[in-house]
Length: 324
Image (cartoon, rainbow, N blue to C red; front, top):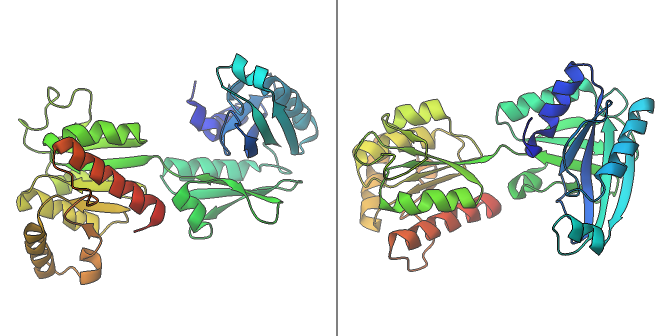
């Protein structure tokens, strides 16, 4: 069984197995709706369901509509009011109203080729938008920067015309930390809580040990080699914590040539000035070097390792959501 966030992948699997799936997507909500816009449920023609559009409140009704949609191959827009009693029954404090778009996989709703391309973009960690009309017609894909604000805010929704729905499919957020030091011991679990998938990079085995970072992914390769294999993209942040140019600079060379959305480097203003001088001598432009946040983190007067980690995570999120 695939995770709840993998409805497109599940739909494609079922389609290729001949099971005639339909995708149901939350397109609008009012009040304390159980699931956010973009949440999906996939239904096969044999009645199997995976995913959720309401936490269990209206899934049965959506399944009935989906089975009917599979018969005629047409999409349909549904609206449900989730009562407080129904919401409470599935563990929620109160209800709300949701609109759900049901799209059979087929030429008149969600074309199979579009679904295949969507899954391929997701597998390649390429941000992509699925765009479709609420009153019928086949959906299509759009890449950035067509919906730049929606990609940055990771927000699916109905456009101002009231007819066009845009489902944003951003890759999961990642964080690469170079330097398995005491700040990393606080930053890694904080970042995971905030929705990042972290990885630690440190060739010094005494630092990057399972005893210090139980259960975490630790790469003991040289930072530039590790980052080249890991891949830095628009949904990846990089934080350098070693204070050692022999480790930080090779990582910076990889980062400044990449599209990672955030680069932060630990060190004082004097340390950062020397870093800028070295990178300039290495041929990087002032514009490239200006991407580095150094000293790393928001200026909140942080003192302890945990407080510094908070300032770093806050700055990462500010850059992700506001672009600065």
